[in-house]
Figure (cartoon, rainbow, N blue to C red):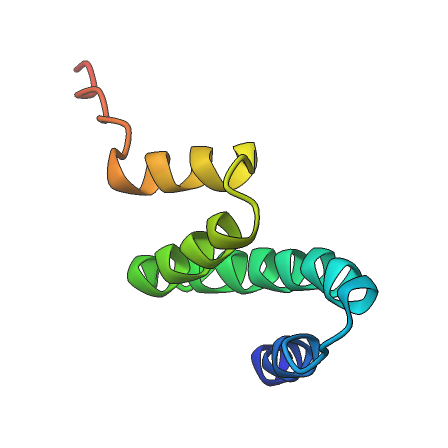
Length: 84
């Protein structure tokens, strides 16, 4: 249900045509994409999460959070073996 609501926000935000509205919608889209990223990563759907991170970077190529998350997904930290 949450996913469906966010998808509607994304569709609505991409329909606008004026420059002022596009600027405001850009921030709304980034936020919606962040929620969708978190949702899919929580469900361990990394590929889908990566798709939304890529969309964030298309809108804001310097977004440090998206860059860091993408880097972490592509290079997960190695777990240290447990000592016995």
